Structure formats: structure tokens, C-alpha cells
Length: 274
Image 1 (cartoon, rainbow, N blue to C red):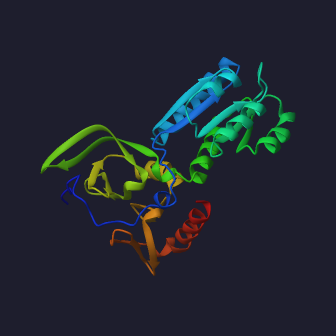
Image 2: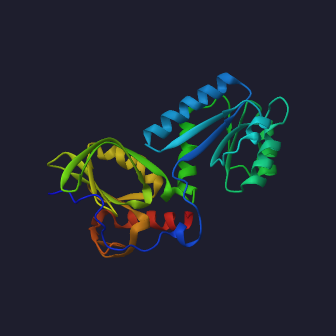
Image 3: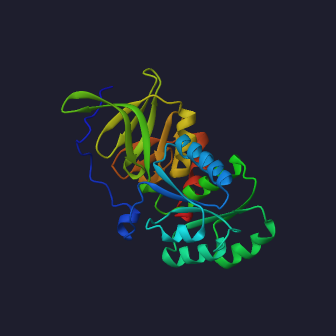
């Protein structure tokens, strides 16, 4: 099966939801950690780095030792991990001011003092609360919930490594390629070649990865398995008829009979969560 040339347009697709409602894409997730305890801050940074790299999501982590320093930052954060009890400005006050600045910022409180939990969540409408010492599994669960609930998830950039593709009729290779989630139509596992084929709006790419690992990191970003070896972007689906999925490109994909109910349920969850 020949590679299609990257850069050669496919059919004109419908506009993405976030383009029609004026939302700006977030391409790289900006994460802030604010904690007066350096050891706790560095531990959480290590967890987040591992989680984001596991899902191959482009990100940047900013570190702050106080609420005052956090509020001095000019960056707009998508996700903030915030200690409640700190010297100077406490986390609840910092969270309130962050929300005034950008109501889309998701705040996850963390503290050793569980008695502050209810007050913090009620006063600031925090996204979540974690009690120290933080556990990697709990942190990852909150990150996954953030990705699944975030309206701009389709504009997140994912990193694909050791990619090959066609350009000007020549095969090219890249050690690392960042692709916007919204541009990916579907992934297909090529059994004979033992490769993953990525079909995008502008062409195709090939690389090597376990299908199970790909499913794990892409499902929180709005993808679902429609049949064995095929993972489709739910945002690109126009309709489903019996065992066929009709895409906004005009193409169709097969829907496994045993997956019909689960797949339709996943679409309903995705649509209601946008």
C-alpha cells in the first residue's frame, strides 16, 4: 500500500466545532504547579512529565513556590495544581484570582490538610482535590478527566516518533512530528507491515507502536476503536448506518458488529462532554 503524499489536500472537511464557536486552539497544554514545598513540587512535576510523555501530549510545566509568584506569571494556564496552605497568599485566594483572569483554567487543589477540601472546592469551584502524599494513579486519573472534559482537546498536539511519509514523491523521515489531534482522521494498524498508518487531512504517515498503547493514549482525546486495528476520531464522524461509519471526508470505515453498542455509547458520552 503506497503512502499518500503529505501536503496533498484530501476532500474539504466540515469546520471543527471550536472554529465555529470562536474558541482558540490550545496546541500545547500549559500546566502550573504552585507549592511552597519544593520536594512535593518536584515529585508532582516528575509524575506529570511521565504522564504527559506517556500520552505523547505536547506540554509545558511551570513551577511556582507561592500564590503571589503564580499570579505574576503572564502565561494563561489550562491546568493548575495548587497547594492550599502556603506562606503569604493561600491557595484559595490564588485560585479565586486565577478564575477571575481566565474562567477556563482548571484548578486541582492538593494539600496535607483534608479539612480544607470542602471549603476550597465550594469557594472556588475547583476541578478536583487531591490529598497528599499524591499517588501517581490519582494524578493520572485527574489528567485524563481534564483531557476528556476539556473543550479544546481536539487542538492539542500529540507527538509521533520515528515517522516516515511522502513529500514531493520522495520518502522522508522525522525523528519527531507534532500533529494536531483535530487533523487526525483515523489510525490503522497494518498487520503485515507491523506499522501504524495515520490518515490526516493532508496526507498519511507511518510509524511503529503497539496498538494497545496507542488506544490508551488517544481515547482520552476523543478517539475510539471501531474494529480491530482501527481507531477513529469521533469528531470526524457524520453518521453511523448499520455497520458503517461515515466520515466528514466522505470516506467510510467498518464498525464491528460486537462493538456497535459500546461505540454508540462512547459517541453519546463524547457529544455530551464537549
